[in-house]
Every structure is written in structure tokens, then in C-alpha cells.
Amino acid sequence: QVQLVESGGGLVQPGGSLRLSCAASGFTLKNYAMGWFRQAPGKEREGVSCISSSIGERITITYYADTVKGRFTISRDTAKTTVYLQMNSLKPEDTAVYYCATVSVCLPNVSPARISEYRGQGTQVTVSS
Image (cartoon, rainbow, N blue to C red):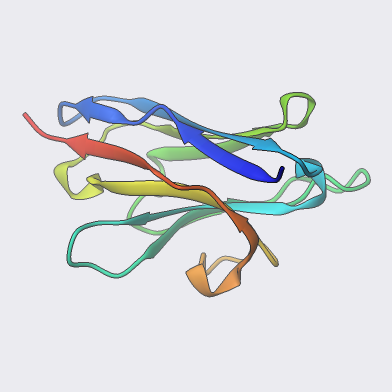
């Protein structure tokens, strides 16, 4: 069964950190570019970050939305079929449901329009004092 399952969300104070995980099963994660997206209540879905696939020996490429650049880091552990999103210096405006998905290609404009075959159900991140 093909699945993407996110974990690591929760409640954190402003300035705090969280690390989200996206575990894949049923397909070969390394063959796919991956993205993290978020959606806050009443707002449109937003692309957060993406990472290129691990096919061959190509250099890993990552891109970030301007709103998170310098604070978030995306990475992948192909041995464990997992993609991570390290989130530091969190702000209240980062509050949203975060979900991971395969994307057709990782480009500087991290767009939900590039979500491809698989998507997780999401994990809630709440930044509040």
C-alpha cells in the first residue's frame, strides 16, 4: 500500500523548533522529488520547500519559500525512505497543517500545482505562546 505519513507536529512557542518527518511506504522515495506544503485556516495552500530526487549521482537541489528561507531546512534519508523538514525560529504565522507530497519537479517557485502522485494527510503545527 502506497503511503506518505507525516509526524512531528505539535504546539511550540514562538522562537522554538520542530522537526517534521514524512515516511514513505509502497514506493521508492528516492525516485521522486518531494515537497512540503502547508495550509492555514482560511488561507490558500502554500508551498514551503522542495528537494530533488536522488536518482543517480546528481547534486541534491533544495528550494524554499521566501517566508521560511533561512529558518527551515529540508533533507532526505533515502535509506529510511523519509523526508524531513527542520523548522527553527518558528513564528505564529507558521501555524498550519503541514503535509508532504511527491512533486513533478523541484523548482524555485515551490508550487502546490506540481504535486504529483502521492500526498500525506498532514500534521498540525501550532506556534503560540
